[in-house]
Length: 133
Ligand SMILES: [Zn+2]
Ligand SMILES: [Zn+2]
Image (cartoon, rainbow, N blue to C red; front, side):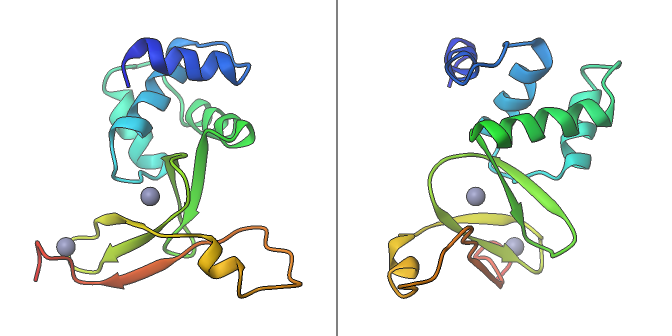
């Protein structure tokens, strides 16, 4: 996604494409590392010296409300963020800590839950990735 496409997504979702918003969304779209707030802040504050962690947090919250970013809970106590790119699961390598996306079909899970109201589905697989094997 180029800068114009990023700005277009923000505008489509009724957000003013401020410098910070464009930066944060670009980073989430381009990187597939599923960063935490701290990791995002660390990365961006090298470039934007006036950035505060609160700004990063509030921007993420806005993106989640607008449905363009998804929060994922991988370690139980730590939220990670990624640009919304449809339903998928995650594989976490216990050696390098890297998180990989797993393509998967949400209906395979929800179809088994007839009569239940599903509000959130998160699939987490853990183990050792091919790089570390
Ligand atoms: Zn690994
Ligand atoms: Zn993911």
